[in-house]
Amino acid sequence: MKSKIETNMKNSAKLYVSKSFRIFFYVLLGLCLAFLVGYVVMHLWNWLMPSIFGVPEIDYWKAVGVLLLSKIIFGFGGGNGPGKSKNMKKKKYARFNSCSSTKNEFSQWKYYDEFWRDEGEQAYRDYVVRNKEVGKTD
Image (cartoon, rainbow, N blue to C red):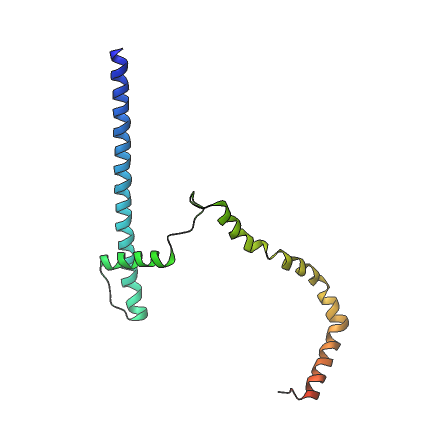
């Protein structure tokens, strides 16, 4: 009996240590990525912006500030994460489905060349004559 309890305690301790190590590793990885992204933004800014727009070079913390400001203004990404509701996805795709009536109209374009050949050229000449009579000339 005592050995089962000790084994369970050892296993749960290993589990907590493993989870703690993973959490520490992911936090450390996130911090490293944040510093790396700030460093990349700083160097891209200092490489491009002064020569293109004549703005001054910036240091690391200003680059992080510019990155954070751009994320606040332009958003943090709009992936289809778990926070997205199905209604939002439906609204997003509803815009594209509203074009379906236009697709049906394009199916009639196969007659365009035939119409232009039969009636279009003469209709255009009549249009030009009417405009000349009204006084719409160049």
